[in-house]
Every structure is written in structure tokens, then in C-alpha cells.
Image (cartoon, rainbow, N blue to C red; front, side, top):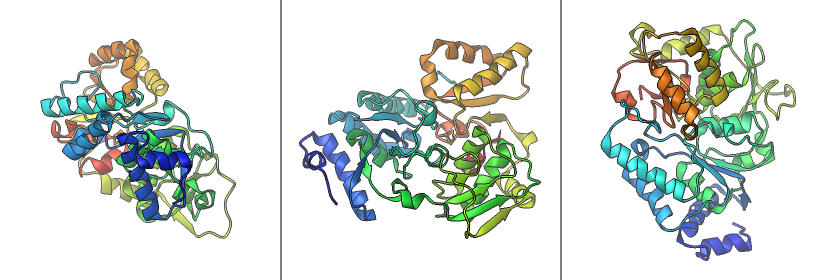
Length: 376
Ligand code: F3S
């Protein structure tokens, strides 16, 4: 692999042990895939941060990099963690809390932004054509599909290594020629799209068309939240890291000609709903929304309405939000107020990456990604 002078020095250990290890990871992965060179990135987003998911091996990897003096070179953020950043009695395993706090400290010492979110695009909107190294599958699909930025679906350690070196291997979706649609997926005209249905469409696309870049023709133009749901579900049920959504994607150049056309209709969507529903909604002990994490302005609008109207929910509603919001006292105040309304805000975590799934047996959700992962 061709390396610049600076990259060679990093690999030789001239910039310290942490950078050397990070560079080795990137170069070896790149060489295994046949990449000819590296590329500079503008934003790294590390996943694989929850102690519950990565256990001792992941814990040692991250804390060692910090101990060896690792410092980020580019804007760097990290995914939700296994604890809530605002005290939450439902998430209280003392071992997890202690280990998770040490991981958090290591990331912050290395210069990561206090983020803890799977929607890093709310913190820094990706620009068309810029190179990223992101490790959260839903965010990867959003960055490529909606914003036209370029990232492969990285593993947590590789995105972390990219944060420390400011580089990733030039391969896959970084190359313009690999970003063209390979199949058309048409949604039948009578399909009534909402957040849930958008997620179900994504779920079917991920399952049915692995390795493809689908050009999606929805029955009506999608709004951003629906597109986020679609991307998250497609990345969860399959390996979809990019699609082009007609009328929304920056890289949409109109319906491509001479591609295979697949159609998704109401029946298949209903069947997918049945497949993912492992319980009746009336049995739910709690309701959950915010997968991927809700955007702050969207969430605030709804929550203030609930308070103004004095709505008290009969069953608990859990909402997952970016962890960085705990830096703002207004959000802590809002979170306390909402307890009276039977609403709990989960800052910087979610049911999938925390142990909340051990506390209740049945959760109802509007997120297909959560419905897909929780029973697993
Ligand atoms: Fe985010 Fe958790 Fe969903 S990390 S995408 S809220 S599974």
C-alpha cells in the first residue's frame, strides 16, 4: 500500500505508540481488502463503546490507547454507551457503571466530543463528498444515502484508529464509481408511509438485496425522520450502507435506466410487521421511541406539547436522546418534569446497548431496528 511520508512515520512509531497501533490496524485492514492508499477524513465516529457489548477485550483496547497517549486528530464522536448520562434507576448494574465510566473517561481524555449518540449528523452535518470513518451502521447509511458523504461501515476499533490518525483506507464507498445504484426498488403507490412503514421497507430492503445499492422510489416523498428509520432498519437486517432515495438523496440523479426493478407492496410490509412482532402491543410494559436517537428540536417540540396539555401516560414511555444534551441544564430540568407524565428520557444510551432489556419483558416500539435487535 502506498503511504505518504507522514503516514510512514505514524506506522514506524514516530508519533507514539497509540498512533502506531492505530495505523497498523488501518493499514492491515486496507491491505486485506486491496486498498492502494489511505485517505484523510474529517470526522470519525466510533461505535462499540457499550461495555455490555464489548466486555473486557474492548475495555482494554480503548483504555490502553488512552494510556498510551492517543489523541484524536479530527472531529471525533462516539456511539451510545451502556449507561444513562442522567441518573436512571432502571440502569444500575454497579460493575457496568464503573467500567462504562472508565471507557467514557478514556474517550474524553483522547479528545472525543462528549457525544454518546448514534445520530452524529445532528452534531456535525456531513458535507457532500467528504470522507468519514463511521462505525454506527444506521449513521453510515444516513451519511452516504442522504448527505452524500463517504464512509464504509467500519468496525468500532477501526473508526477509533481513524480518529487517532485522521485516516482510513481508500476503498469501497470512498470511491465514486462504487456509489452508483445497482437495483431499483419501487414502493407500490397505495403504500401509506409513516415512520414505522419506512422502517419496514428498510427491513425488507436489507434482507432481500444484500450488497446492492438500491435506488428507492417511494410512494410519496420521504421526510428526514422516515429516511433515518429506513436507513437504520436496512443496515440492521442486512449490510445496506448506502441507498439513493428519490427526491431526497443529494446524489439522486433521477431514476437510472437498465436496472432490475423490484417492487415492495402492502402485503409484504404487513408480513414483515407480523414477523417482527413477537408480542401483542397491549402486553407492552413500556413504550420506546428514539432509535436512532431523536433530534433535539424534534423531541423538544413533542415533549413541551405533552407538558402544556398535561398529558399523563398510562404506561411508561422511554425516549432515547443524544448524551451531549445533558450538558444543557434545560434538558435535565425537562427530564425531571417529564417524570410526572410517566416519560423517562434516556440520555446517551438505548434499550439495545444497555441492560434495560433485563428489566422488562415486553417493549412496544416504532423503531424496526429496535424490534429487530431486542429479541436477539
Ligand atoms: Fe441508536 Fe441504540 Fe438504535 S444505538 S440506532 S438507539 S439500537
